[in-house]
Image 1 (tube, rainbow over the protein chains, first blue to last red):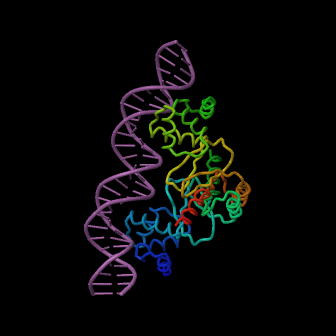
Image 2: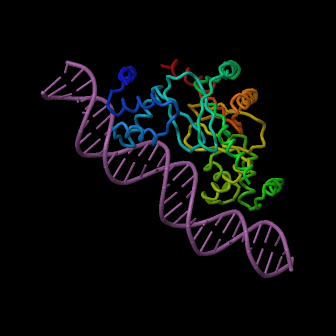
Length: 146
Length: 146
DNA sequence: GAGGATATGCAAGCAACTCGCATTTGTCAA
DNA sequence: TTGACAAATGCGAGTTGCTTGCATATCCTC
């Protein structure tokens, strides 16, 4: 919450209370958040920001490269701070749980694409969808219980 | 357009004109389409289907596993026939061109996730975003010309 | 502290998608 | 072939995620 100010300044954005609070919410949260989650978190910290403003701030931060968009087949975007190490997501289709995975070498594939196809890869998204261990256990219990 | 009927029957769906036409559009098109593209294609074939109906059909086909959802950071879904070989997409952020890529072994990664994390992977999405060769050429010309 | 560029709130608007209900249409059995 | 019924469609209204215009408030520089 202190170097948020510098982070904003470094990309020529004014350090307003709304932006500082939003940025610190994203830095403190490990999972990607959608805009309504962001608004909830801000309210819990006593910061009341209009929905339109949240979208404007998020879009600015995204185009400055400070936050990343995450899509999980929910019909909306989530966002996470770009400062984290390269990682992807396991998304449980039953309960919505999200887990990070980091061990994958897409880098090699990106390099191949760049060399063979002359396509300049700027970013990518890789998400796995399925059922998490907890939900699998629940399902097994449900089946056994009848 | 002939075995579309059987395809629908095989998942207990009535073979209505709208569904048959929609399915054949998806089978004939190589790129993933969004709903308005689907509606346009249907109209060109003289089939007039309501927007709500297209969404209903697409959702049914998706939940029966006949079509796949594709997300390309456009704020909406695209769909493609699930019968195609496993592949992913190169999406040009400048002109919107989409190219398929097929050479990647995510399978190994999926297997690892299933074994190490007990997470049952049902599907995944991998999309690369960047600038395609044509757009890179245009950009170079634009820079050289001034 | 004042001035000017910029950020915000509010309200209206848009696009993707859903839902309820009356009508039409496949499908299957007789 | 036909008739009946479950299911599909069209239409209209509604919801949600997101954007925009404009007046007011705020941050930053001097």
